[in-house]
Image 1 (cartoon, rainbow, N blue to C red):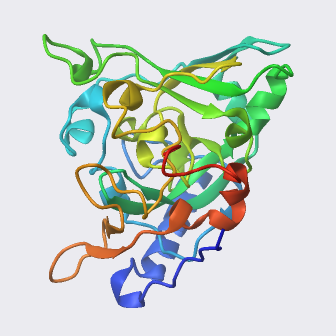
Image 2: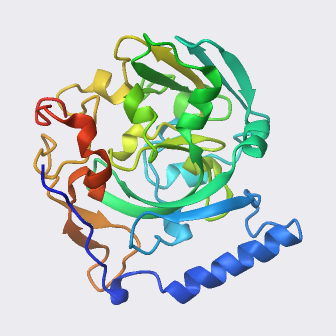
Length: 311
């Protein structure tokens, strides 16, 4: 399988680096004095930084205002507009199933125990738009190690919160999806070093509209795999269901690997629209990269598989 390497982005089409670095300085100063530059966020203590792409980050204002989070509504602006009542603290994650040490973990304690890293990842939505996001979090494998998966475990199932009193998208007579939102990964995908649980972005705790307080990030897969507001993880021997695959199996597969050669039945996946790039004609369109540009790291996970059938 060929290796896909991300191209450099012209400086005229990205967020100026000086602005991004000034923002880091502002966040660092806020952390020093125990302040936050956003009302709905708190500074995180980031122990290390790993820039996995050459791309400059998408402006925070775009990352936090253009979202899919159907629990708050189906329009891109709904999560930011309708998530103000959601309470992400206190928070626990239950981990059970085929593990030697099942347990319920307090997220605040996890953040204290695990070193928080910054990882700048591309995010490619199945709808053919993309962003570059500086996530803050830790490898999912660190939490899996605490529960000691059994030899029979092959998959990890994820489940999100159901709070219709705080999530208006879960309320009402007609629902866009069945709740709770559920997702799944193969265990080797979940343990891959790139797979992370994000608890923040841009050096601050996750805003409600971005999946507060903890969400999954798997950068070589389409964005709908990144389940938000996780409350439970279950290790299983059989492949778990996932929400979009149940709703439309011909359109949304279990693997959901970014693949420009496998189109969605209703649109091409060959190109994508990069949010926040601006310009006279709006966001720039660019070629989509196999595995979202992470082929060198993850292609081996799918050796011998027909990626048109296992899409």
